[in-house]
Length: 318
Image (tube, rainbow, N blue to C red):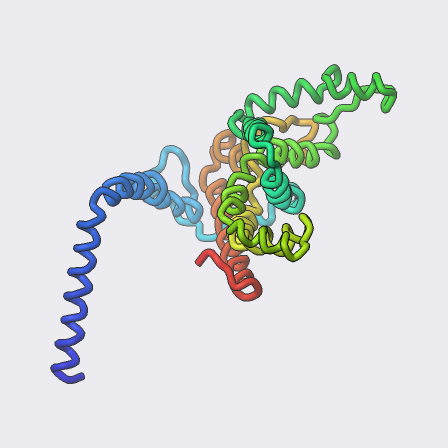
């Protein structure tokens, strides 16, 4: 490399630094709002990740993280050999996949239907009603559902009154009903809230596209399939990638509230298993290993879904 080339390279770096500091100074008020959030994430999200190393140790509450003996992959091997492993994976994947297959398209459909409402008052009323369940805690909703689905609850009273069943049905005591209760209660709670992003995307579509389609004689369904859905395809793709990455998340709060000893064969998932193992059995290293396994799978799913989306759909998160 010649002296001139070296000089040009150094000069480019100097200019780049100057531009960086100029932009930083120009955006100082924006930076002042952003940095507290970044610092908060570093302190409470990233620094605690040091504790992940206990997944490879035999940690007890009387030890420090650093003094606990190393056991390598022993905790992971123990989890794979655990008699609960097949049940945990079956319940976790079963509930999550059904939530994805049934629950993911519904907010899209709901948002499209809402966008077609011309009565603004009715539209706002419907939106408000659909958003409300999201703001209720699962502790509250769980109590409501336990009362409704109990043997003397509203649902059983209706079933026996209509003659559908002579005896009350134990919805929360029979494992075969648990998956569907978890899926449909989650859909009822979150569909309206999840539709907000799609409504915002639909609102950003150029109205002249619909006007041109009407002139060409396109009906409502044709407009939806040829204008609305293609226009929000990017939003759908991003949210689908994120949904796939969270396939092992089964909504811990919901499952724990609705869980009881009678429905345990269908309600025990990875999240509740980690909670019980760590806080009830004090097996912190084992629970951390199980949680780390779940996080690694989530990362693999995220990267895989992103790569497939980029290859086939030409859209991705990164």
